[in-house]
Amino acid sequence: MKQKEIYQLIVTISGRPASVGYRQLTRAVALVVQRKEFPVRCLTSELYPEIARDTHSSPQNVARNIARAVEDCWEHGNRKELERIAGRRLTEKPSPGEMILYLFNYCIAKEEQKD
Image (cartoon, rainbow, N blue to C red; front, side):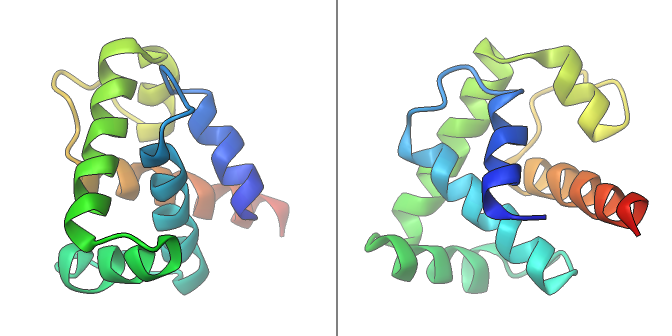
């Protein structure tokens, strides 16, 4: 799935998609989809530093920006669409890692449907 398609998917669940956190969330999902593997314990040690290099930021800023985007989705976004993407009812705000995982799984499933 292309980065533009991932961004469009994220916009469907977002509250205010203009923040930098949404672009960094999109990049995180695109990198994980490209690798076809979710980095279970490597978000802060591998994924966020790579995004930071790409966006001329720090890994701490990337983590904070993605967390804010997740918060925005939860507080102001389309909860029903988020639950559809997650494949389950959500009773509490997902962590940034969970959000990336939900989006990754959804994107991989969509790619498999195309084949």
